Image (cartoon, rainbow, N blue to C red; front, top):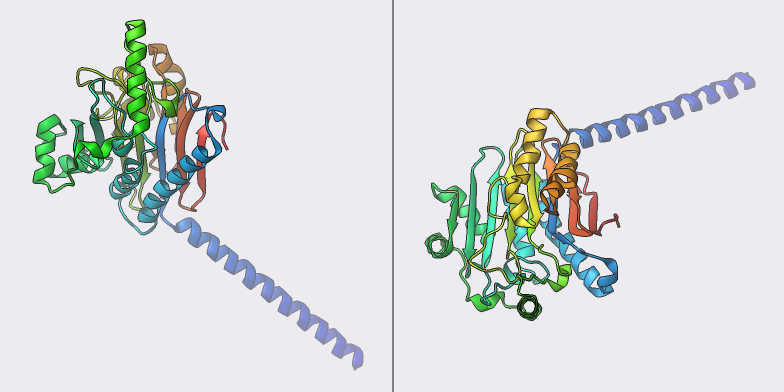
Length: 353
């Protein structure tokens, strides 16, 4: 009898443990399924590409860039996580970078040869292919917001100069004194470029934060939980630019493009070549018509087609499945990405940090 009781107890113990293990496995499976069933979303940003080298960067400045990139991308990621739209995430994320003197956009914009700040921006909705852009504005605190207003509250795509500024006033956007955009470092860069130009008799460009390269710009691309894509780009253009020069940032298809069929892209680099190569649209088109993956298309355009034209720079992109790309052919690109699982990637230099 004693042996039977011991055997019964042993069987009961084994049965209980099996039930616990099974319940635990079921809970884990349910958690995994819930996690997998969460609608996909993600966000990617850039803050300019060029000769960004670790040996030229102080520890404090490097940390400042990383902190601001993280602040910006978390702003947009929170919007997406709470069910907000890709368009809103792109706009608010870019606002964070536009308000920082670290980047060549709005507050940190470079100066023209005439000593002014001329700002460009664009935004595009991947669901409708609607888009808005502004060029050469001088007193709009956040140009990306004006580009958005052009998209949703006008029949146009691109407004420039005084007309764009008048439209901004009518839409109630924040207008600032042009002095708001002044930063000592950017102004000295323009003066240094002027001097180099006088000495060489050739047009010279200088940006102390992206060592002597023609690059700047901020951008953001996002996929929201509803499966919609959006892209936006904002810039101060080339340091020491003349003749009201406009680059690729406000040009839909060159600096910015979004299409729910494929991907959302924002460019940064030598704008003239991005315009000639219609770089942002080219990546989308290669995905749509050649069935290439985002990674394949981005690599082909940035590593092969763009350099063949004589241009360089980079792009950020996200496709309609949440895959992202941060492709560049320069020594570095300020960049960050976050997926639906809140996994954060931040990079400055050519290698991944």
